[in-house]
Structures are given as C-alpha cells and as structure tokens.
Image (cartoon, rainbow over all chains, first blue to last red):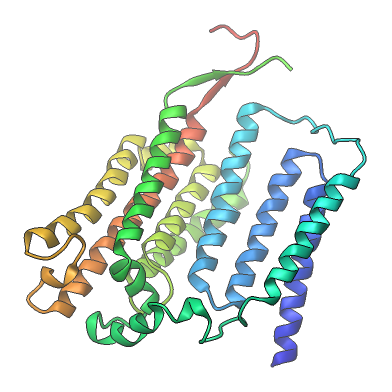
Length: 184
Length: 145
C-alpha cells in the first residue's frame, strides 16, 4: 500500500512540476491559461490523496473550471493573441533569488511537525475541544462542517460576504457596459 | 456553438447529474465532505457549462442576471438573518442553539440554513461573474460608437 501511495504522489508531483516548468517557459497567454487549468486539476488530485476531498471539490470546480473560463473570457474580450515578450536579460539574478528562497523554505520545512502529527501545536489549541465536544454539542458526523458552520460561523459569514463583495465589484465594472478595443 | 452537436448532447446529458451532485454536496454536508461553498461552485460550474455550450442568450433565458443579483444578496441575508434570529431568541449572534427548544436540534437547523445561504450566494456570484464577462461587448477599433 505504501508503494502505491508513493507512486501516486510521485506521479502527481512530477506532473505538477512539469506543468509548472512549462508554464514558466511559455509566452502565449492562451497556453498559460490552459496549463494553469491542468495545474489546478493536478492539485485537486493531490488534495484527494491528502484526504481533503472538500478542498478538492473546490479546487476542481473553481480552479479548473470557473477561473479558466473567466480567464479565457478575459482573453477573448481583450483580444490578446500576441505573445508576451520574454525578458532576454541574464536569468542569473532571478535564478539565484529562487534557489535561495527554495533553500530557505526547505530549511523551514525541517522544523515543521510531521504531517498529521497529533502533537503538532496547531492540533493542540482548540482542535481537541472541537473533536471531543462536537458530538454532544452539535451531533453531526462531519466535524469539518460543525467547525466551519457553527464554531467558526463568524469566519464563514465573513467569507461569504467577501465572495458577495467581489461579485458586486465585477458586476459594477463589467455588467451592462461596452468597452473599446485598443489599436494594437 | 451551433455546430458542436456532440458537445451539446453530452452537456445536456451531464448537466442534470452535475446539478444533482451539487444538491447532494449541499444537503449531505453534515454527513460527508462538502457544504455550501463546494455545492455553490459545482452548481455554478454546471450553469457555466450550459452557458458556454448553448450560448449566453439561451443561458440568460434560463437564469436572467437580475435573478442572480437578487439570490446572491438573499444568501447573505439568510446567513445574517439566522444570526440575528439567534440574538432575538436570547442567544449571541450566530448562536444556533437557541433556534429550537433542543440545543442540538437548533444547531442542526442553523447549520442547514446557513449552509443553504452560503450555497445560494456562491452559486449566484459564480453565475453572475460568468454572465458579466459574457455580456461585456467590445467594439473593434474603427467601429462606430
């Protein structure tokens, strides 16, 4: 079983890395949008492997479907079929910064607790209370829902209002208006 | 997309199941993975699929923009309304335990209602975003204003 899990993780992360590399190399906007969709679908698969199925739902629906379509709509509205000019300067500085940042993150990860460690600081604060009291206080089998909807109801209200406000913003900018395409 | 017959047939066959799955995720969120947000985006994605395959004019006959603007606000209103109802019944804002005589039943009711509010708002906003982009008309340079 461990071998299969390793194989799945290895394949998914390998494809993820390959997609990221191709995205960084491409200079066509349409290509990058489609590749970001693929990247998002691979991320959704990784969330399934990590047992976060609801996050995977969201990633698949928002990241792969909705945001790709909105980006494509934006591309067709702006009519941007041009290739983006690549910087032809020496990549040494950017490469150095990326490698240094990556190394710093790798060092940071060493100090992090093991994945799903019950004694990790994040799991010792209010999580034990939610897990033990949710059955008697709220009595629904899915503790994630009871945390999101009841214990953290205020946060979730904030999130809904954020989505609502973002929607109003886009509607105010776009709905019922006409734009003029710039001369290339 | 008048000539994409296969796409239209496949989309027509798939959309009811996507909608049904969205409703399942919505109302089964207490028992399995999912909840209002996931259900809302899946519902929205089904409608967007309909919109891109059959065209925005057909899609807007099914769901006019004014309807989604209303329902987006209704979802937030339902959520805050449940919170205020808790205050009126003697609890704190968003305390669902006071919504029913039995505290646990009140929690169940509150969670069901606020998840429904989340689902309505998220689905409506996703559809509204798509329709805003689809309806935005761009005039080519040189075209008369």
